[in-house]
Length: 96
Image 1 (cartoon, rainbow, N blue to C red):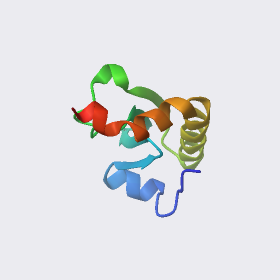
Image 2: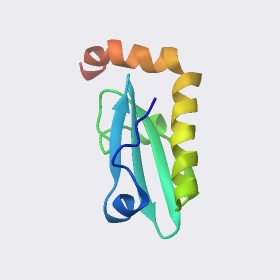
Image 3: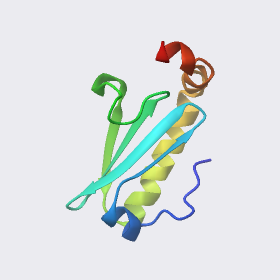
Image 4: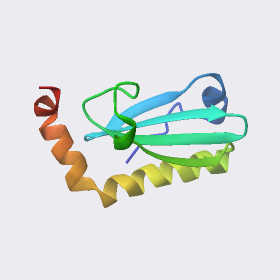
């Protein structure tokens, strides 16, 4: 589901990566040897989303860790698909 085209360890070392998929947004960043992944709902940016609406999981900063992070993002989407779809369909309601 989540495409990793253009996403690799070298790119993440230089700057964070963010994207979205059907109401679910994700943000990946590195610090030292850790890859931190955050999931949060539409419609806000990472910075504007309240911390209590973010879910975080850390992985080793390696290609295997990145692969595991992408798997976790995909599994999290499937596990909460109705929630993410609601956030997508009603994002204007959340803005008001």
